[in-house]
Length: 355
Ligand code: SF4
Ligand code: FES
Image (cartoon, rainbow, N blue to C red; front, side):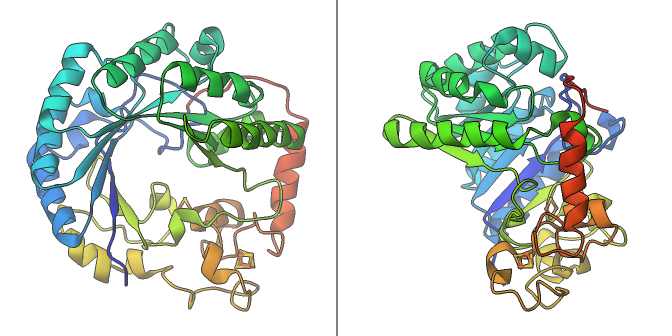
C-alpha cells in the first residue's frame, strides 16, 4: 500500500464568496466546530510521520483563520511544503509578509473570469476580482511561485484565451483551467453550469495552442470535463492512493466529497491517528485496488488506469458508490450522463450561486 504524499487541510468551510460551482458540503458551517490550532498541529505531525510531503491549506477561505501563520510555521518546521489555496480576499502585503516569514512556499489564487464585472458576478460580491489581482501581484513581489486556478463553466469557458493572457500579465508560474467538478452546490447547479460540446472543443483547442507556444513561460494544466465524451476521470489517482483530506471538523476522507457516501463510517482525527486511518480504516480500504469493482470494470483493461472513475459521482447519479462511474461510456448507467448533458443544453444561461 502506498503512503500518502499530500494532505488537503480544509481549515474552514466559511467563505466570503458565493460561487455557484462550489463543491464544498452544503449548509451552515460554524467556527466552533473547527479543529483548534493545537489539534491541527498534531495532525501535521502525524501526517509528516506518515510520509506526507505537501500540505495544501485550503477551505472555504483559509485566510479567515487568524491562526494561519502559526499553522504554516508548524508545518514548515516539520519539513512540509506549505501551499496556500485562497480566493485572495484579505491577502494584504502585511498578511502575506507574515505568512512568508512563517515558511509559506507557494500560493494558489482562484479567479472567476478575466473580466472584472463577470468575475464579480460569478463570485456574487463586488470588487472581488480587483482584490485578487492585487493579491496575485503581491505574491509575485514576495518572490513566491504563483498558481492561478480557474473553474471553467458555461459563463467563463469562452474567455479561456483572455484567462491565459491575464495569467501572463500577472507573471503566474502555472495556470490551472479545471472544468467544474459536480459535487455540493455545483451538482445542484449543474444544468446552468455545464458547457456545451462546442464550448469545450473551442477551449481545448486554445489550450493546446497556448501550451505549445508558451511552454517556457507558463505551465497550463487543463482538467477536462468527464461528462461529454464517455471517458471517466481517474479520480484521486485511485481511492486512498496518494492523498487525503482533513475537513474543518477533523473528518479524514479519501476525497473532499466522500462524506456523502452512505455507510462510509468516516474516521476523525479526534478519535484515531492518521496512520491508523490511512492503513486500517474501513473507509480508506473500501474502494482500494480493484477487488471491489463490478462488471464492466472488473474485466476491463483500463481498470488500473482510471480506477473505475469516481466513487462520489457513481453514488450521486446511481445511488450506488460501487457502481461503474456513469461518466464511462461502458457503464450500464451512462444514459444518465447523456440526459444531464441534454438537459443542460436546454437550460437558459444564468449565473447560479452557492446553495
Ligand atoms: Fe474505466 Fe470501468 Fe469504464 Fe473500464 S468499464 S473504462 S475500468 S470505468
Ligand atoms: Fe470522491 Fe471522486 S470525488 S471519489
